[in-house]
Image: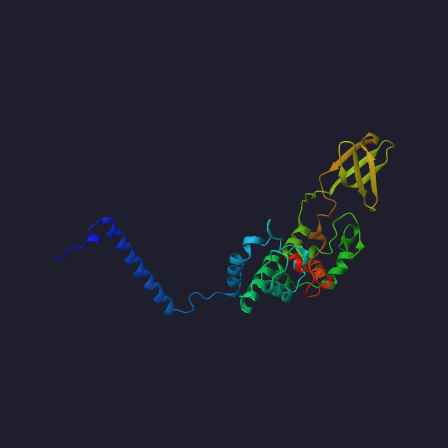
Length: 285
């Protein structure tokens, strides 16, 4: 019978060596399997982009690209969304001097392209490329049949009551914009609560409450005018739960017209953005 070496007389030592041998054999087998299947770990461009983003970018910009206390929101920020693919690639490779955005010069071109492609998917731009609507017809609907310009402005044209939609397509996906148009019933966002004010003389003013405190209220009427009134000179303030935005677009517009309208809203930021290669690079940190 073979004598047991002194180092193996301790059961604990024998157990540790056994585990070591098992792990070594497993690692060797895994390595052989990798050699036998060289394409096993190959990734699609989208998977490669996601992997690179999660390991190199998410620490500052967040897994969803919406930013943190370390870096800006790069999935929704209008200035970032306006940058071309070439500009984004340059920022990734060269960084932004004087900021916390480092240069990833060791990234091969293929990896940079995958990163940019993944960022576009976070921004919803891939979905925008698949739009089938006609932006020109969408503009006609916005200023015509849809009556959107009664309350909304685009590039200085339109109404004042609703949000300016000039850059709305740069911070929203096509599906999100379509959902906003079709949503019913609507819950007015902050700053867009509708009300009817009745003054001491009996005059009725309907519009949106822009500011209000315990003593006064500021109302913007449908003609765009602002009215600042103290509550002491009002008979009644009637708050309206419904939004001033129509809730019947599902009946008013066909599916094709909705696609045209969404395509127009998505196309505006691109048509308005003429950014030079170095413009806005300091905004991507």
